[in-house]
Length: 182
Image 1 (tube, rainbow, N blue to C red):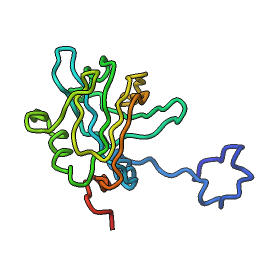
Image 2 (image 1 turned 90 degrees about the vertical axis):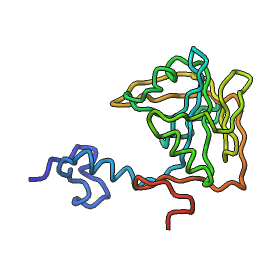
Image 3 (image 1 turned 60 degrees about the vertical axis):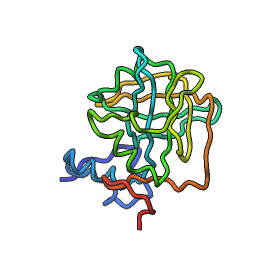
Image 4 (image 1 turned 60 degrees about the horizontal axis):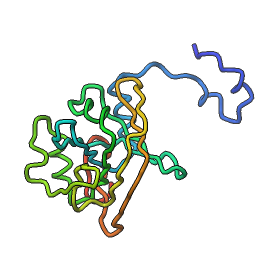
């Protein structure tokens, strides 16, 4: 038996078959459906209070506002780097180019020495900046919001740069792609 329609949809232009609620879905089905949305791949970097560079591969990055210039990204509650990102005043978001797939894989591995052989330099605020990226956003850590099993970070962009000639690294259906999706 189909669920009753909310009053706002009773006179909808959509066919009634499209308006019925479906059966519950599994977490795997949800992940697989989300995987159909292709995204870019980023590495977010910051510096711990003890002065250690920290970084994580993240595909949940979006523009939020042009005025003021705001971006958002999220990190899982179980990420070992979460305490650093929650406390830091600044971080950098690096949009990776297709040639940087090995770097994305390195920064996604638990316990890896991420900065030992990774070309980088510090911003004036001491944030590690990776070299060779398609774009970089240096951000002030404006706010954080815990939702579900992630923390959403909103960053106010203080400086950015981009390189159009660098093809992006893409993430789709659980895999990184260096040459489009087809």
